[in-house]
Amino acid sequence: MFKIGDYLTPASYKEGAIWATANRAQINPDTWCIEALPEPTKEEQSANREVAYQQNVDPITCHISRLMDEEQTDEIKAEIEALKAERAAKVAEIKAQYPYPETVA
Image (cartoon, rainbow, N blue to C red; front, side, top):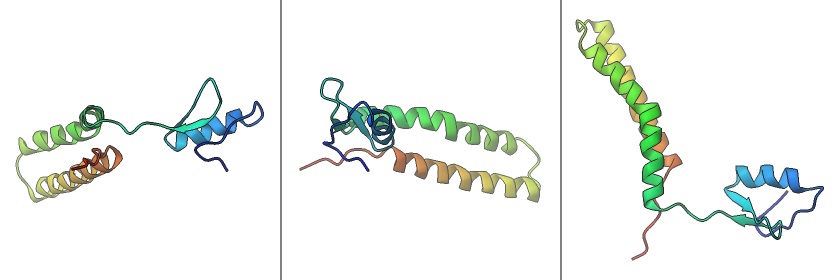
């Protein structure tokens, strides 16, 4: 429907704003033109990852640590392994969501 470089009208502004938000774009407030957002820097992505790790990975790690303090029954060991797999999947998801910019040599 919309693309980078399109100019919005009062009638299309709301839909254009929704599209821009979903597609890493912004609307120039002076021209109402849809523009691509600049790529985040490595430092910005690092900060984004840090917050995502704190919110999503650290609680899993804490749960694993608590379980390690318990008697290591087969059930507890299986739960720890499942949590380790869940944690690895979250880390991969975060890395995919917040990739570091490609460096040009």
